[in-house]
Length: 165
Image (cartoon, rainbow, N blue to C red; front, side, top):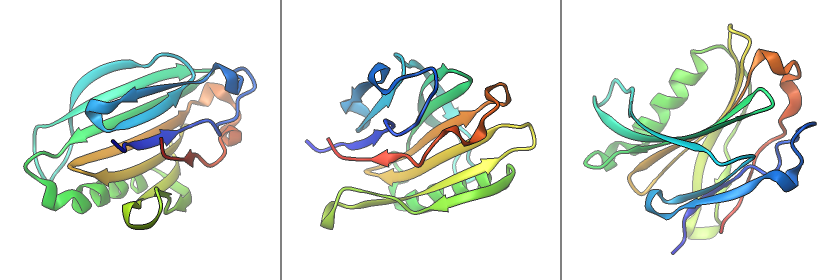
């Protein structure tokens, strides 16, 4: 079974060597991700103007003043609107601050390709947020690295590398 894989090995840290990162696989949610430590998992409701009460799972860990978070939103019953949910999330991000970078990454090759959008936003509160958004098989995926002001070096992240497992 192929799953959407988010690999965050390319984040560069002074205090967190790449060897400390570990892959966590969530087959039931359709993704794998690497974190610098075991993520905390919580359930929530995703805020959307399109549909109220969307259930989400949030996987997060903070390391060296950077918050890593993967949010998986279950769009069951609303699959036909997946692109609208993705665009709504991107719209909300660009309204949060100054967009300093955007890209359109791809996971997988050929007919199995999944395209998304990556945005880096400098927020008024001093946070720099790098978010990659994807829609696939009834789920919206938001992978975020939030560089907190205490970190000091907002440029510590390099573009994420997305791969397949």
